[in-house]
Length: 255
Image 1: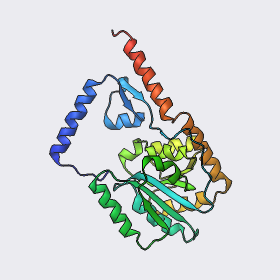
Image 2: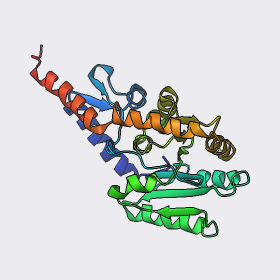
Image 3: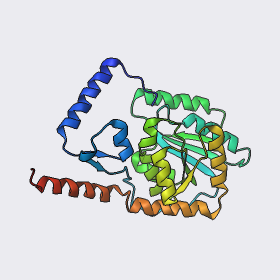
Image 4: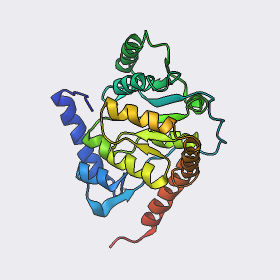
């Protein structure tokens, strides 16, 4: 994740991790791959993927021009610079392509990173960087015709399920992702977007051009994602599932 912590910070957090694992009877994880990655015991797992809190609203119309977007916390190691470079390459074939970056900053480090990205794109007028409030995210991201998740190769990224994936589904926009294992599986199985042929700027650029030239398929795949967001990836419904499982466990006599 390119986050370097002092040794004493790592030790404190690992002690807290061990305490939590020992304390809670049920361990909720987003995927079995995540549990394997973190070494959690299989017999105590409740596998519930991430989801979206933006379900329920009707989708807004697609833009009348090619706009790609990424909504994420502002942090290094998420492929943002690669996305900027890939979009720049794609503009040789789609000259009116625009890139919107919706970046959340929760601390001074993140705010500083956003300023670095602004400096990087100061001469790229087709790139827009903003930090909408949560209540503004639905309308803001609906300005895109394709959402992109450009995560680079990383063991954690392969097992994690980013909320940005499900929020893109909630606004009925198809998703283009790099081939991170769990994310790619959801996109492919749901027919809700595309997965690049590989990693790096070239593969990302090719994926962007292919998706934006897909015609009616672009909106169709967005509609499939929207249906997923209303059903199995709806936070409200998922939280009820978790509550039901935990309630059942609490009422079951222990041996």
